[in-house]
Length: 320
Ligand SMILES: [Zn+2]
Image (cartoon, rainbow, N blue to C red; front, side):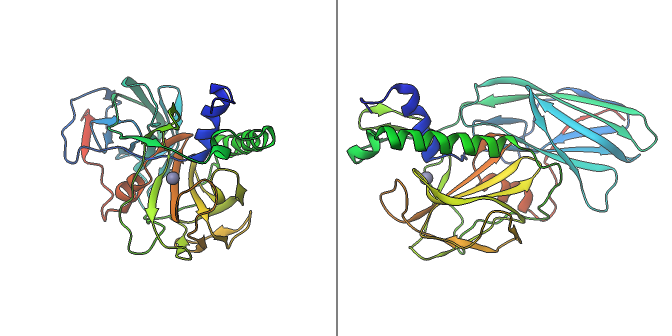
């Protein structure tokens, strides 16, 4: 790392673990009353507060039907979708980037009822510091001190990924629950881990490492379109799936890629096989999730959109 400047080093590490996760939704926690809504409308959140790398599910409810619902959380857009068969319910996901500064951020939600009445809701959402481990790693010199060609390549790939994550497909391509991409695996490790590489602090690990032997099938977490399927310098063979509304899942270190850019994948489609390509010490799946560019723990979307009712737990504010 000594041979490259800090900025390049930082970018390089961002690339290694481009997608992130982490976060703890205090299950069942009761939030403080915050914000207010237009009468007849209700805003609920899945948790009263958030932490770095977590995801919040928001629900806006009106007896009169809802249209044109939009959200903004501290300058970040929140896309909403209508729950099927429920005209009066719209939901959105707020991603809390794993490096977002702790503090309070205002969530504003606006929309219209079916009769055209304007709706305005707001709530303060606190971000707490995530609890992440620190890892000291010694890696091969060629990865710490990449050649100018390798730095150029890694930076180009980083730029390409940023451009992908900046695009928000306005349609929701997924429908229903998200799944963990490996059969029989329910947890992973290293999300948000701060890394000190050969003595130099780097960017946090932005994805979740799932255990798996080389050749294990990797399934798409939900329905979506393949927007990247190629070998990357740090992530090895990688696939990025666009699920719409700014939601992307990332699959890295694959031994084999079974899909191509433009393919529409159904939930569970095998997109590749577990491997050890890129900068890794052994076979595993690096699984990432970005929501409106925020790197969050992918297990959170499984948890939030995977339960039977999908009901957010926090009743944030109601004006009867
Ligand atoms: Zn990883």
